[in-house]
Amino acid sequence: MKERIIFATGNEGKLREIRLILADLGRKIVTMRQAGFDGEIEETGTTFAENATIKARTVWEKTGGIVMADDSGLVIDYLNGEPGVYSARYLEEEPYEVKNRVLIDRMKGAVGKERSARFVCHITTVLPDGSELHADAAMEGRIAEKPAGDGGFGYDPILYLPEYGMTSAEISMEEKNRISHRGKALEQMKEKLSRALEGEQ
Image (tube, rainbow, N blue to C red):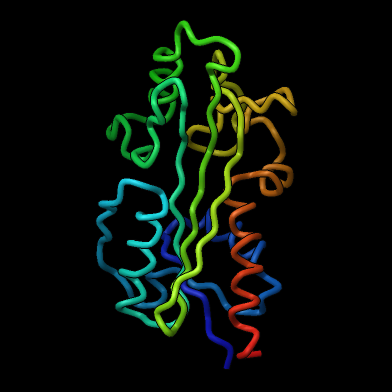
């Protein structure tokens, strides 16, 4: 039987995107909870790669098999890379509407290219033998002058994409999946994983 792929997430929206992109691997994709992992994972890394690897390894140690995890966030050059790996925990108790307004306020005085920012994603896959595969991707843009759009989630309304003339929250879901940091990292990982698993086909 072909090995299932366990994705270290409980986010159903994220899982739908992952299943769509990885569908032609021909393997069932399940959440870590469905695979029997119900513990908490402490993300103690200082980079997206470290956190993705911590998540994948923590689950793999309990479940074995093929385990994939991602870590992603918003990196703003003018703010020395903030919120970065702390994107989800930035102003922890506040809704994203507040977080987005605070970040825009902190950008006062930044113009043009000084507003450069990007969504970054790192994916780590741990294989049954314990070896690892890694993929990185980014979606480049600038911090908008004001939030716009109600598509997507999180920081999408404030990452302006110059080539589209709109924010990440205003483009269609199909287009976003094609150009997004996670979409591109998943495509890279799919290729690497296909090659690694060729012997099992």
